[in-house]
Length: 634
Image 1 (cartoon, rainbow, N blue to C red):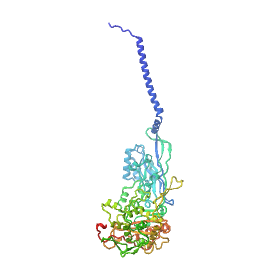
Image 2: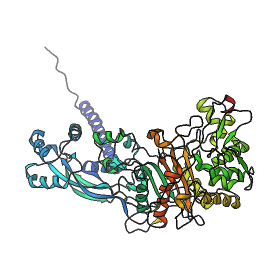
Image 3: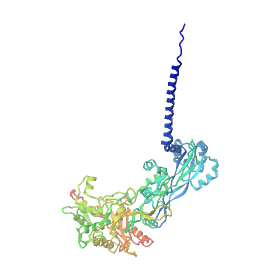
């Protein structure tokens, strides 16, 4: 029989009380922790969680600003934004592709590229978000779609601003173009600017991209849990892009293109007093409107396979041997260095020889020019004068002065990608060909031949420096403004740098250039009937060499072997307001091709009309040696 256990009520009550206290303390601690957690959420981190909550409810929709408008110096529009339409499809509302695509294909001209791009985006985009199917909808397509719009739920015509170039080909290498943003562009854009659909690719559109694009705004769009927009609850307006007014004149730009006719090449006209570029062309050009919304493979292939390279900007990327157009600057260097005085004379017999060397360098006239001073050397383009001058200066001093005049360095024009060009020097020859410098090299470069490579911008800057007395930075943008009603604000420009410390030396060089345009000078024919005074210098950059003493007729050669025709000058000679540099590819002699083109440009600016000069002038062909040169004479 089991013994009966007597319960201890007092002990059990005491045990219960201890357990109850422990449980109460546990609950109290739990409630304290919970209260602390709520305090942290509701007080300490209140702002963060409110922001997160709002982010789930409020989405930011970017508002892309209107791109800045580009004007010429007289306020005529060169690049603006026009209303356009694109086709957007919301897949969730439109349904299966086979239900609507065949019908749309009969209304819109859809390319294989557009269809492929649409399919790629549809795979990675949520069904309720619209996807662009086609840009550049024509008015006829828009009208046809309006009639049958009810048949295509989820398909909409959306208006937007499209970049338009009113004179696309005329300013292709100045203004450039915008194109659709690609992956490389996205890597360079800040977070706000990634909403942009287009960005400047070339020309001023690229150089002034930050100003032209403006500042992206946004709308606060309330959405439901699925992310669908319910309404706009706030808005931060976009800031429109900066308008630009160029120094370029539309009429002069057109006159410059017309002056070239069928020729190809490049030309620049600049105000020597300010550095403002008045007109600037690289021919052939191309229609920049083709690139705005994506150029077709066919059009792009046509441009890239064109042997004339219309996409290549000869103004900042190309360069030519300057030929005799350098002679006024070399003459100035001779005076400023003290190596020559204006009255010093050199005998030109028709051939020039280095001591002890059988190789000869010819003069521009086979019979020579006789005794020649500085003015005559410029007017008649006497090579012998410059052969001896460069040797007397020495290559180090020669290069120093040419570098001061801006050769071998970018001009600083407000375009992207400008090259340095090539200023021949012993260091350059050793670096590129691993050869030492010879006196014959100095002779060659003294008339703008050899390794020289200069751009039209470098040439016009140098010749404008002679015209005005100061070397100035060429620039295209004159003024800017933010907003249509805002005043124009001039863009600050660096001050000019004196080209010579001696105004008397400059005047002598100018007189030689004036004589170039008078009887006896190499370009006198094109200036004979001009109602204003002109100063200039012709040049011919050889591509094909002479054989022995036989001159080469450039017109008998294929175009790519013909001499490049050059001219630099300014007018009116006594008070210059325009300086020009012209380079014609395959044009032959400077006096017969480039000089008449320059005359038409000067007439268009100074007279308002481009008369056609009568007759043709001739310019001397830069010589080449008549015999093989030993190594010491190269």
